Amino acid sequence: MTDLEKQAEELGIKVDGRWSEERLQQEIDKALSAPKAGSEKKTPIKLLYDTWFEEDIRTRAGKVVEVSISEAKRLISAGKAERADPIPGDE
Image (cartoon, rainbow, N blue to C red; front, side, top):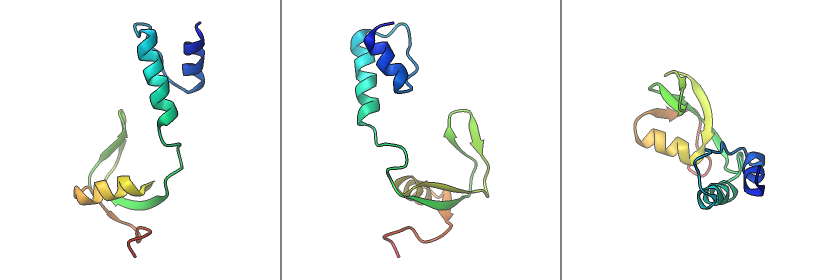
């Protein structure tokens, strides 16, 4: 296993054996520059439609979930959700 593959594994990147070293480095750089989980404030929203936050995991309409403020605003503006309480900063 190369150093890049070890670093990718530590970052939780699923390495495709067909990737070149350049592609692997790009994926590592992308993971390192991504906002850290939990770094953005979260707010509860009520889903009006079934939503897939992860590829194969459906979250049913009617459920109240906590999402980042930017995701909440995106879903609300698309008519897919409604506020479950005031979004901080918009009060």
